[in-house]
Image (cartoon, rainbow, N blue to C red; front, side, top):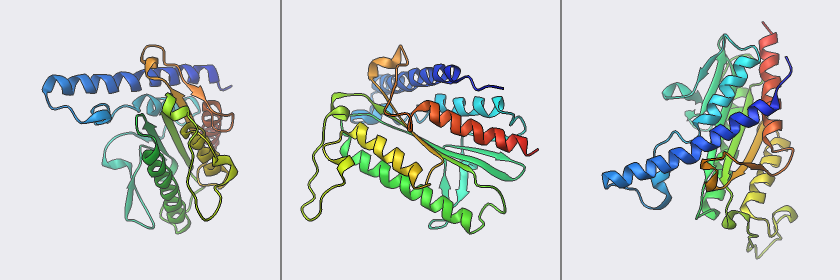
Length: 245
């Protein structure tokens, strides 16, 4: 069956609307209770903001023949063993016949602070992947084919995320692709390198303005790091897993 990419772009728009809608609903709820968090935390603490993207992946698994797979999206059952640490809690796991088919992380970042959060997200993404692949090498998941490991970031499209950023590196020059790059461009570079270094099977960066709560509008930074590539790579992996039966 041919992959209908337009269908999954529509699902992504619904996921974006859910993201912004959930953030606003959480903020209003906390304001009504009189216990609102400081700053942007009011829209984060609900914890369900990226659920639309999790459902997109679950739909993709079913459409590609993994009707007998177990798709985990909530709770401690999302825990996998690590190598440098005992365990890691993922955002979505796909298991089938005792094998790990896929492990995915879905992250988001909104303003006004992009700098420190970008560095934290970068370190987290790299560390998570290195830990998983080392555990895989050491047999933590038994003898099985390599799982799909995915990372998707939804970034607020805002003046501060699009503006060029200068870095201070007094001893050695910063790599050219980071010089004067905005935070959105830095995430694009990050996603490309995560895949080039084989830390992730696919890595995706989407940008979306707050006004997308009604429209679901989002934009991509490049073909390599866009939604279509992410969905296509994952669909191919899931179909190959289904064919093994």
